Amino acid sequence: MKDTLRKTLLVVDDEEINCAILSNIFAPEYEILTASDGLEALDLIETHRNRLSAVLLDVIMPRLNGIQVLRTLRQQGLLNTIPVFLITADSEGTTMREAYDLGVMDIIFKPVVPYIVRRRVNSVVELFQARKQLSAEVVRQRDQLLLQTQKLAELSMGMVESLSTAIEFRSDESGEHVRRIHDITTYLLTNTPLGQGIPPDQIRLIGIGAITHDVGKISIPDAILNKPGRLTPEEFELMKSHTVKGAELLSKIPQMREHPAYSYAYDIALHHHERWDGKGYPEGLVGDQISIWSQIVSLADVYDALVSKRCYKDALAPKKAMEMILNGECGAFNPLLLDCFQTTEPVLRTFYHLNQEGGTPNG
Amino acid sequence: MDNAVKTALEGVGIDVQEALDRFMGNEALMMRFLTRFPQDLNFSALRKAVDAGDAAQAFTAAHTLKGVVGNLSIHSLFHPVSAMVEDLRRGDLSSASQQMGALEAQYLQVVSALEHLQ
Image (tube, rainbow over the protein chains, first blue to last red):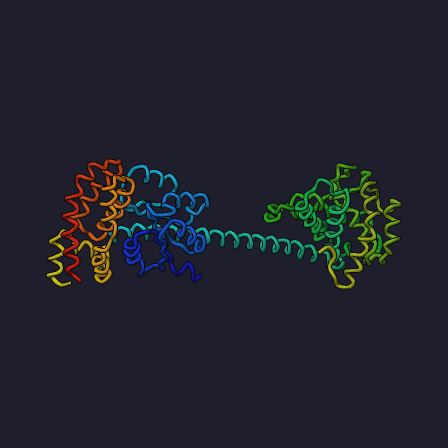
């Protein structure tokens, strides 16, 4: 902060009178550093590079001349950040040409006329300062935008979750259900061959899509949703409609339709009751016609229902639940999916233990 | 500044006002460099190099001298020295050497006026 407030100018000239005249011109506005040859100048530039507003550089000097200094500064890439003015007594063509080619900001002739040299140097220094502030501002705004985008994404994720949890509450299930479906789905995709070829950011979106799998239940009457006994065939037909209704509901929310997770959410809501043998609903899709994520959510949904207490049943032991699924008592599943499920079930089981202890599995 | 001093300096070809402007009106600073001019070694270095036929050395001395007299607005020396710098840049030592006498006469006048200030 202090460095940007106090502008610093380096005057490089082997003639004392030149240093004195230039220092005297700029002393009211700048802190002045002086060097009496090129080597000394390079040393000072190296030390003060971050706070130098400009360099006024003589051409003919002992040890290292002005053109040699320019060449070094160009090599170091410093001419883009520190404006260098060549202060020369003669308008000899080749020197000027070379200086401009190397990237000198301007050439000022000696003997100098103070009001001209002041105006030319100050204009460039202000330009460089404005440019620096502008690029810092752009970086600041970009960071702010990124942060806001992230907050928005979190907010919309929170809204989706709240909506889904609210619907789960109607059917007397704990809000943990949607969370667990999300966790089981992303776990299987991340840690088994089921997720092969699916990049992590897409797995994250599939997880979001899994959360809304049951939103269609909002259209199912309480009497059916919370009926303790078996459903009549008519009631069951109505219950099955939660898949189509859910997909329809999602497609009617414009913000949802524009969400990157939308295609997954739609597909999962519609197809999470399809079965591998085509005996599921609503479309009776067979085998690989059902997306792998919808297949995973189906299985997770069944498993979660079995090991949780519901209005129509008690919670089963995980071992028993797994047996029922593997036996085909809950419908047919992809053999690879069953295989992966069987291998990872001991881990999936811990999601429930952790929840009972108040932790959150899978981050 | 004393009017008599100003007149004396202007009498030997020094544009006092222009020099003062260059020092941003800082008269003390200007006078410090003016009164030090007689001790400046560049003129004798120039003369020695020209006498010795060393064009490169003569160029360096003439170039520096041009810078100093330019800064001090000593026009009576600035113009002849500038001409000599261009001759020496081309390596034309004989032309420079021909001008040396006239330059020296002018130089001595300026030095004499400046020494009277002290």
